[in-house]
Image (tube, rainbow, N blue to C red; front, side, top):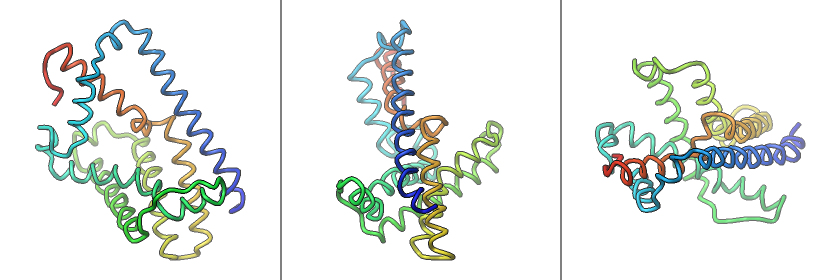
Length: 215
């Protein structure tokens, strides 16, 4: 099981992730090209302005009105993306398999970043359960996607600290990580692929067409 998950299944997961992501992006661009409004409304200036503005914490009125949500959201997403990319254990696997390596973060820092993701997942879960507005638009798939996003960090944290049976936890960690990779292009987790495009469009629509700000 370990040999399969750390070998062929890694290839399968990455191939599905890359091919699925490319397919979704190309399909989206082709649809936008057929639309007579999308590309004519696009403005490089307003797209960049919107992207920069929304990537700076508390730079919009919406964020300032929700300080706790803003802090947790930024911390959660930053740690969710950068922890697996710059984790030493993951880089070592790439180096052993493909002779590719890059800078890594200290394990102690990565450990705390995993905790941030787990804590953020708990926050989002409680928010969906207790906030009437959010709860009203929540269904089973939202809980499943939250589980898919956080489970690799829970299993990785447990495996790093060698709690329970370490080999079992490593296997569960690999399964969770590969499921998340495969799920990204085909679920609402794909918002990480489309964030740049959607923000650029909203920024252009507001600034270039309506002569207003989208914040």
